[in-house]
Length: 316
Image (cartoon, rainbow, N blue to C red; front, side, top):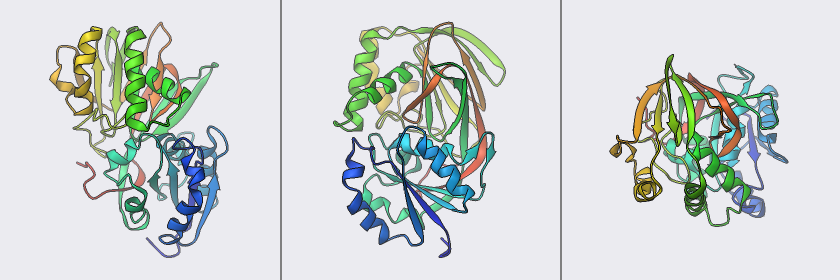
């Protein structure tokens, strides 16, 4: 990293169930041992991370360090774009995982412990990564456009994240997501959906659709073991109706990268643009947040962002 690089550190003090704010003096001291020429900006409300990042890039910052969980990284990565245009295509995103799930760190093959992750902020490998752009319906009406790096889940996965974000995350990522998934399985009703992938349309009843750019989701679920970060395609899993007892029995498969062991209920596709609609209300999860509902269009933007990744990051 050039010594003259101007760095903005975007911090969500409410991430990790508020532990980021409580630990901030120690985190700052650790950052000062690894970074020079940086300024710190704290998020104050939902969506503020996107605003702070966009403004920092306009002000000439060339490396953005996102401190928080996957929801924080989602907001910060969205800030690299202004509508459909990148603010600065040469700027670099680095993440310091300090949240509930840390799934983006898993997909990037970055350490999830603070001390181990710090050296990567300045010395880590920089890759050009694909980005997903999603346009969907706001809960209050109208459209919202945002960008994400890792995964989107439409249907039951959207409902799970909605429940996680409404309740305490004090148990950590694995237990928070697992408990929400178990509760949701008992009450969720499968939805009829119209699914278009690269122009090919199917209509079916669906439990959920996973659109993956990265490999991990939901506090450690290995949902897309073959997904590559820069291959120009999504890995798409369409999960059909399945009985409750069967879903519970098969739950370990989603943690172990074994979704394709159930071809009787799961179909796998690859593509670069996905459109989904339903006559019913269906929530959408993108990187740990619920930006809206169907209808939605998710489009892949090849090599659209520079990101710090681990040496073993899954690339083509």
